[in-house]
Image 1 (cartoon, one colour):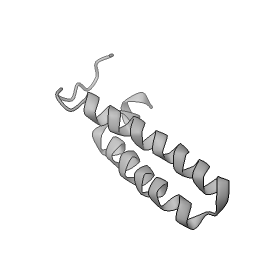
Image 2: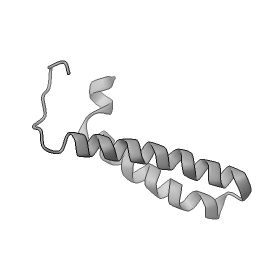
Image 3: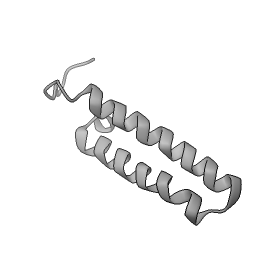
Length: 66
């Protein structure tokens, strides 16, 4: 599961999808629930973005433990 979640296509999907939801949530959902959704999805997008940045200078290492 860890190798799947750390693959670049999955990280790009998580980053872009959660960023779009974080930006749209306050306009779609009213009140505190929209703000909380936006913050939560923003945190996930930030984590995926950091994962992309962390692995950007390194070639893919399949089958090796980190």
